[in-house]
Each structure stands twice: as structure tokens, then as C-alpha cells.
Length: 285
Figure 1 (spheres, one colour):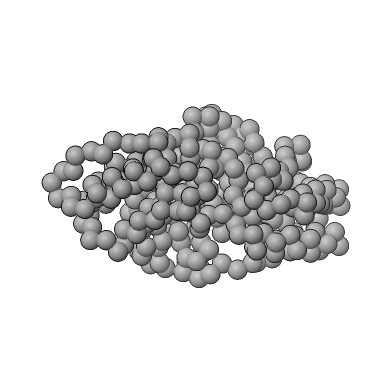
Figure 2 (figure 1 turned 45 degrees about the vertical axis):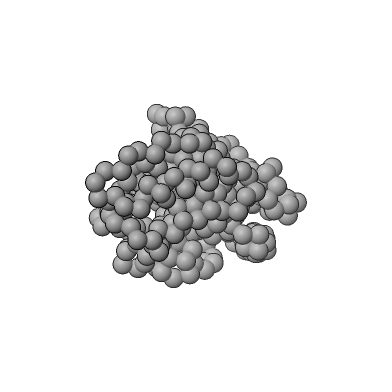
């Protein structure tokens, strides 16, 4: 197995507790900016050429690709040497978005690089043997949305509310109705729980009814954000935390993917330019 740590842990929607500090996300509350990756002082020329070949193919694919086209650039790294994999990881660095997707077929761990829209994807079978190792360029890898759909249903039962629940049943009924009618291309339907008169029992009711899906996303683009898929199709729980790790914005969104997750076209364009510059820097090392 080739080492490529991805600092993301799978948790269910609404399951944040005080002892689950997001310590692996530095500088909380600040806007993430581009940081040039650091390379080792001495690089084996053979390894460097191996990596330059990979990054060159990636750059060519990004330049030729129309942003948003589902057939996005993807390069299999399975044949690379261990040293080359290490250098690829160092050359691409670690960006602001980490994703974990769990399915019956195994685990997919995805880390955005410092180049927005460029992702490192590792797949593991149920025995935790590595079966996938690629670098891809897309707003978000298509496998993430597919994994979320596998573990959800077009509709869920609306359970009878226990004592203490006030407004959650009507919110759940609204979400179930919208999710049943939602189709690709529709605008996101967002329920801002922070602005609603909800008691803890309401949130617990929604958490239990929607359940935990198969995908968890952690982003630090504008502070700490956790995005969790639910068992209801195209329905996501989105939570923002401040520097003290307190929940400051709590929403549920019916959409194919919340806007906080995918890379924007403008950022992707910047990544093409920065990657080209970085390849030239590596070439001169």
C-alpha cells in the first residue's frame, strides 16, 4: 500500500459533539489561500522525470477539458514507483477539501490538492486493500455523488414525533416532498435550521429520521465546514463551525452536491496556470 494520508473521518449528519474537535484543519475561520507545495531538497532525476510525465499528462488533460464535462481527466498512478508516488503527493500538496465515502464495495478517500479542482483518490476494498490510486481534475470526483446515491432512498418514512419535538416533523415532511420532486438541474432547496425555532429534540428527531449517508466532506475554504449525505436522496446536512469549533450555521440542502464542495470554474482556471508554473519549477530542480 502506498502511503497517502487523508485527514478525514466519517461521521453522521448532526452528530457533532464537543470532543470531536476538527484539529486536522489549520487556521479555522480564515479564508484558505494558495500555498506553494514544498519539495525535498534533493530529488532523484529518474523519479523527477517519472513525476513530470504524470503532471504533464494531467496538465494537458486539464487544458483540453471543458469545465463541467463528465468525462474529466483522470490518470492512474498504480504503475508509479513508491518514490514517484511520494513526490507526486509532495508536488500537489494538500488543499482544503477532504472526502470519505463508504460503500459495501469499500472506502473511497479523496483529498483535494493545493490546485483547486485537482484531486487525489484512493480506493480500498472491504479488507482495506488498496484498489484505486488516481489523480483527477474535476469540480468534484464523480464517484462521490455516485457513492452518496447508492446509500440513499428516494423517500423515507416520517416517524411519529416523541414528546418534546416541536417543528421538526413539518421540516422533515417538506424535505421528503422536495427530494421526491427534485431532479438534476434544479436549484438547491435550502432549509436554514439556524434561523428556525428549534429545540434540541427537534434536531435529534431530524438526525434520526434522515440518518447518516455514505459520504462525509470536510472543507476549510471559509472556516470549518462539514457536509454529510443522508439516507434521503440528494439531501445533505451542511454545518459550519467557528474557530472555537462551535456550530454557527446549520442547514439541510436538497441538491446533487452542496456548493461548498465543488471547485469553481474560475479557481480551476487558476489551477491550470499554477500547475504549469509548478511543473517548470520541478523541471529545474
